[in-house]
Amino acid sequence: MLGLALLEIFMSDQQALRWKNFKHIVAQSMYKTLTEAVFPFIKNVHGFSGTSFAQYMKNAMFLISTEQMLEKIVTNIDSLPLLLYCPGRSALRQLKREYINT
Image (tube, rainbow, N blue to C red; front, side):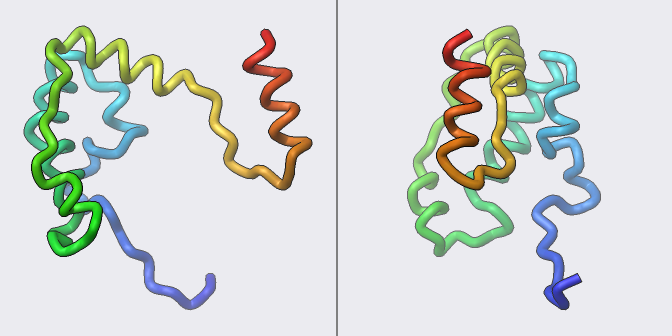
């Protein structure tokens, strides 16, 4: 549309790593996917080892201890309200009214 090339973050064999797919995996598979694929992927997104993010993540450790805890965390993250577009303070006030004060 804008004449820019699309930068694909996930290759065709990495579609299970996408949030929309990952959040539906059963707990045991979710834990394995996160420890063996997602976490290493995040630590070195597309091999950009020279980035600040990669340097910061270099010594990161995955510390979620159980499959059940991971499933609870994913469920809670997925239930968070997201603002896709925030044109100004009025949208923030509306968000506060709908989600924080209820």
